[in-house]
View 1 (cartoon, rainbow, N blue to C red):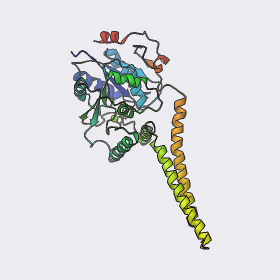
View 2 (view 1 turned 180 degrees about the vertical axis):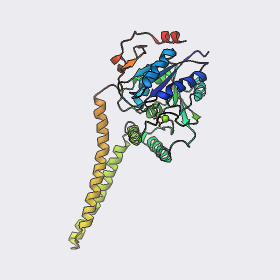
View 3 (view 1 turned 135 degrees about the vertical axis):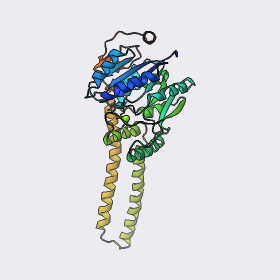
View 4 (view 1 turned 60 degrees about the vertical axis):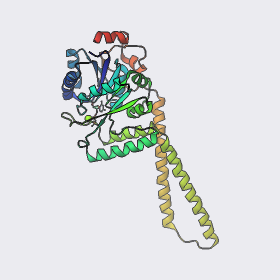
Length: 336
Ligand code: UDP
Ligand code: MG
C-alpha cells in the first residue's frame, strides 16, 4: 500500500450507464492505492443520481455531490476539487474516453516531484476533423493571448498536488476556465500521453455553442489582448480616415470632387461593422465583470454525503452542508 491518499474527481452529466463501468475499471487499476472517488452530478436528467447512490452504498470510497441544476463541466470539477481530501487529485471524465489505466503513470510522475501532470490525448482519430482543427488553432491563439502556454488536447484529465488543489479552491470566479488556471499556476509540470477511447454510452455534452462558450471564456478570462486589439483596429482606421480627410481637402482645392456615393456607403458600412465588433469585444468583458461582481457561488449543492473536512473549504461549501466538521487526517485515517 502506498501511504498517500488519491482523490479522483469525476464530473457526471447524464452518464448513468458509465458510472458502474468506470468505477469497476478504477477499482481494478488502483487496487494498490488508497483512493476516494468523488462523483459530481452536474444536474443530470437521467438515472445518474440513482447509479451514483448505488455505487456509494456498495463502495465506501465513493462519495458524491449533486447540483440542483446543470452548472457546467468546469463548475463540477471545481466542486470535486473543493471537496477532495487527497494528497494528490485526479480529474477524469465519466464517459471512459479517458482511460483510468493512465493514472498509475501520472502518480509516478507526481512522485518524481511534478506538481501538475497533464494527460494529453495522443490519438487524433476519434474527434471530428472540425473539432480537431478548431481545437489546434484555438490553443495556439489562447497560448499567445494568455502569455503562458496552454497545453493543446489537455482536456481536463490531470493529476495535481494538494497545494495546487488548495490554490484552485481559493479561486472564486464565475468564469472558470481550469485549463487556463493550471497553466497560469505554473509550478513543476509534466505531460503524459493516453489514447482516447470512443464513447460507449451517452453522447457528448459539448455541442458547438457550449464549445464556443468555453473557448470564449478561456480567452476573455485570461487576457485583455482582444481589448488592445480593438484599440489597435480603432487607431488603424483613425489613421486611414485622417489620410483620406487630407486627400479629400486636396481634391476639393483642386476642384476634382467627384460623386462618390459607392465609396461613402462602402466605408460607412465597413467602419460601422468594425465599431460593432469592437463594441462586442468590450461588451464581452463588461458582461464578465457584471457576472463576477454579483459574487454568486460557482455552484450550489443540493445533496452530498461528504461532511466538511476543514475550515479551508470555500463559501460554496457552507451554503448547503451541515455536516460534522472533521479534519482531513481523520478522514484519511477512516478511509485507509
Ligand atoms: N460534463 C458535465 N457537465 C456538463 C457537460 C459535461 O459534468 O455540462 C461532464 C461529462 O459528464 C463528462 C465530461 O464532463 O464526464 C466531459 O464531457 P463530454 O464527454 O461530453 O465532452 P467531450 O469528451 O465530448 O469533449
Ligand atoms: Mg467525452
